[in-house]
Length: 353
Ligand SMILES: CC(C)=CCC/C(C)=C/CC/C(C)=C/CC/C(C)=C/COP(=O)(O)OP(=O)(O)O
Image (cartoon, rainbow, N blue to C red):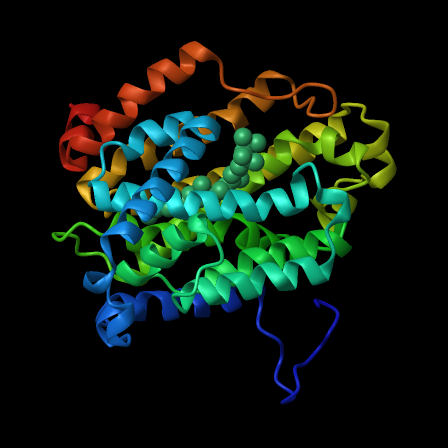
């Protein structure tokens, strides 16, 4: 990828950031288009769904909600504040992402092949065409009919799983950035059309998508920094090789798992970068629809605190798993609520006054 000097037309290749930004421009353009359901054949229009199917669909959404409640408790509680339509849609997307992730991370992960991922992608395409394979896919199919969600981020998440099958080293941050977009930034892009942008927001749609992407990247970078030891035990190093080298470190140091001054310096640098992405994301939360802000603030603040915990562990992410304690979690939830409901000018004044 990065060692190709030019593309087919002899132009220098785009950086990962530019490639991902092109996806964002496409997503933002979609928001202004009429909903897909209006341009679908009449038998696929939402108001023509028979009552029995509607009941089955409601059961499927309930199941999605249960899965979300089980695996992402805080986020689930936050979704309860959203309108019923939105919360159902978020659950359906959450479940699709979880099922995708389980293909490579779940109990059957060792049997996963590129062919199985291709089949999963075909299923996704069918769901977007209104021909779901099972009821959970049906919930997704209805969601993407109702909201201006594009298939590209979903395809890209599957691309991330493909990447994970054959790649266990990242030469530089550009390569890692693409991976983080695939497996986490995509979630941000899928979520914005559901969560909605505040009608009074003056921000451009692209900038809100960009902030959502930043949150996905920040979360994934944090995840990577938290899990260095665990990943190394599986032979994987999700850290930029060139940056390790700049700090005088190599794969062997990661496998040895000893916290040295070089490691601390390297980690400080990585944490700094993850925090920059969190900051970029924060600007976008303010632009989201009022009811969607709380769950996003809560998950942002909670995830960002994992970085503090790595610092508190004196950068030992080889043998210690950084986590946010119960009390800190409990304090974060109301803090997130205040940030979500109080206009930023007031909090800013309160902070300075
Ligand atoms: C900021 C704006 C404008 C919108 C918000 C857009 C959203 C919801 C972005 C969130 C993106 C997101 C949740 C990405 C997933 C990131 C991630 C690393 C999840 C980790 O999942 P698990 O592996 O289950 O985590 P744990 O191992 O910590 O349980």
